[in-house]
Amino acid sequence: MDNQYTSAEKLCVEKALEKILSFARVLDTERVGMLDALGRVLARDIVSDIDIAPFDNAAMDGFALKASDIKLASPQSPVQLKVVGGIGAGSVFDGVVNSGEALRIMTGAALPAGTDTVVKIESVEVLGETPANPEGTDIVVAKKLEEGANVRYKGEEGRAGEVLLKAGTVVNAAGIGLLASTGNATVELYRRPLVAILSSGDELVDPSVLPGPGQIRNSNCYSLAGAVKAAGALPDICGIVRDNKDAILAAIRQAVATHDLVIISGGAAGGDFDYTYQVLSELGEVHFSKVNMRPGKAQTLSVIDGTIVFGLAGNPSAAMVGFEVLLRPALRFMQGYSHIKRPVTRARLTADANKPDSRRFFLRARMQRNLKTGEHLVTPEQKQSSALLGALQNSNCLVVLPEGLTGSVKDEIVACLRLDIDEGTEI
Ligand code: AMP
Ligand code: MG
Image (cartoon, rainbow, N blue to C red):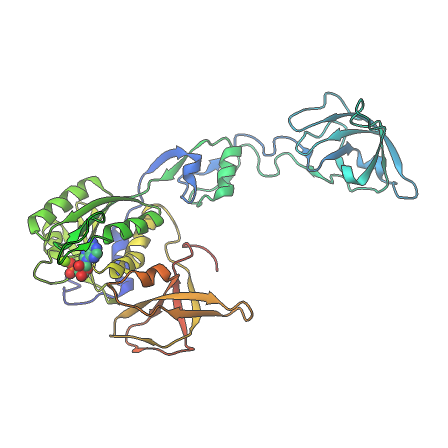
């Protein structure tokens, strides 16, 4: 135990987060297929091996021509040009288009030599268009065009050798397209943390089992696995451990040896069968065991052989809120994300919110935007018990009621931690 914090002292949320982040390390990298980059962080700059686009090309179906040929074109004095052929995307015109001529061209086809502009098919009259002569023999242009109109230039997206995506970028679907067009079929990313998830409790049975007298189903392993996955990490459900010190010791020891981070829920308070604290302090160093928050006071941070082992509260929504507030930022950090804080929106409470004690209170709540006024309104869920999950399923935010206050009243403006928006999103 740190001298700084005794087990009786409840650490404030910021200090607890700071502490856990001080032990979190960005993981090593791995090379994966480009589709696996979605939502993940690039470990290296992405350089293009070619100019993109690789050549000047038509942005529209129409006719390639020289702008100077039609600079005097108007409805009163239209200009007629001779059609010398036609090309589609993927083809190259093998010749030069001279002054007074035009080439029928499809979107994406390379602009032929001698031309600088494309006139849309809808803007011209095509003469002599027959099945035997599908491109037509001539076109009549009744309007001038700026040079370069409807042309996409070589290298517009980027030049060969240029960095198109910087290391640290979170790749979205468009980014995967850039990986493809730059020839990066595989890409180096920060590894996803493999997270062991254990639950301790003599009362727990697997979800497939009908609970007997005094038993409940183990929901924490699964809700936490969902939360780990949503954070971009890889959950490994290690299952139920009985309330037995040796069993917990063995399970933690094994999990530490094979995972990047270990979570154990339950057995966190100071009850007769609560061994988490004892085991974690025997195997490693405990840095705190109480956080000044509700739900989720009983949370234990320990580091064992360099691996973070985190004891979450046993109560289902306390475990989830603790994960969201303390573990999710750490898991994001380990994957190289530079933004690890959820966006906060200020909203007007639609009902009074009571606070049972002085701890920082994370109220499960639903936020909506009044479409007429643009104002954000937030309604706390009725059932705030830390034993219940339904309120969290319905929530899209956590209302943060600060320490000390007794609560907040209807119409007060409160800070809401957005659970429905990723970290780093500008709102
Ligand atoms: P504990 O921290 O072990 O005192 O547990 C606090 C409460 O959470 C008790 O009501 C437990 O039955 C419940 N609980 C503990 N672990 C789980 C779990 N894995 N799934 C569902 N409820 C749990
Ligand atoms: Mg227990």
